[in-house]
Amino acid sequence: MAITGAVHAPGAVSLPWQFAALTHSGRVRANNEDAIAFDPALGLAILADGMGGYNGGEVASGMAIALLQASFGRWLAHAGPRAHARTVRRALQAGVDEANDAILEAGVANLQLQGMGTTLVVAAFGPHRVIVGHIGDSRCYRLRGGRLEQLTRDHSLLQEQIDAGVITPAQAALSPHRNLVTRALGIERHVDLEMHEHSVRSGDLYLLCSDGLSEMVLEEQLFSLLSQHTELSEKATMLVEIANENGGRDNISVVLARAGNISERDIAA
Image (cartoon, rainbow, N blue to C red):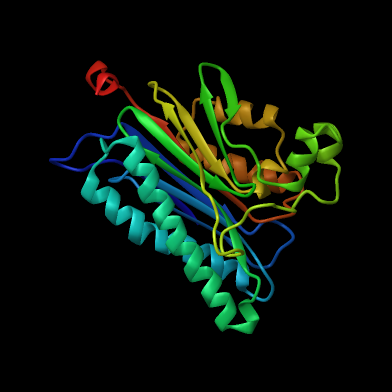
C-alpha cells in the first residue's frame, strides 16, 4: 500500500511538510502485521509493528494506529500546530495510555489475541519543531545537510547489551535475538513513550520505519537512497525494494516527511 500527501488546509497555519508512505509484507511472511498512517493537515505520522500469535500482531498495530488517530489526532486538531511542546507530550502520552489499555484488554478478552502487542513510532510535525515518540524498535531517522542520524534508540535486549558493553554493534547485527524488545504497547499496564523534540530546518527529511527496513538495509544504503533527488513516493518505493532485495525477512513499512521552506517567523514562533 502506497500513500502520499501534502498539506492543503485553507485558513490553517501552513505546515511546510510533504508526506509519503508505503508498507509491504516482505518476501517471507504471508501477512502484514505493520500499520501506518499520516494526516497531512495535522502533520501527524504513525507507524506500528505488531507482534503476537494468530492475527494478534495485525490487530494490535491496527488498534494502536486507529486509537491514536482518534484521540491524539482529535486533540491536535483542536490545539493546533503551535501548541506548547509540554502539552503535546502530555496529550500524546495520554493517547498512548488509552491505546495500551485497549490492546491489553482485548488480549485478555480473546484467548486467540492473548499476548499481542506492538511497537510504535509517532511524530507530530509542526511549522518549526518535530516531537518524536517511540516504543520498541521501530525507528525514526533524519537526513539533514548530508548527514543521516538515528533519532530514536531501540528499546531492545540487544541495545541494552550494546550499552553495557557486552556485545558490539557488529555482533548485534548477527545475533539471533534481534527481535526481542524490552518495551511494547499492549503488554503491561503502563508503558512510557520515550519522546524528544527536534528543531526543523528547510529540507529536513524524516524517515519512520519498522525493523523490517532497518534490519535489512544498511545505514549507508539508507543515506544513499534518501539523498537521491527523487519524489518522496519514489524514495519510499526504493526503500522497500532494497529491503526485499536484501532478503525481505519481515514486513517493511516506511513513512517519509520532508520539510519545505521554513520562514524566520516560524522559527521564532
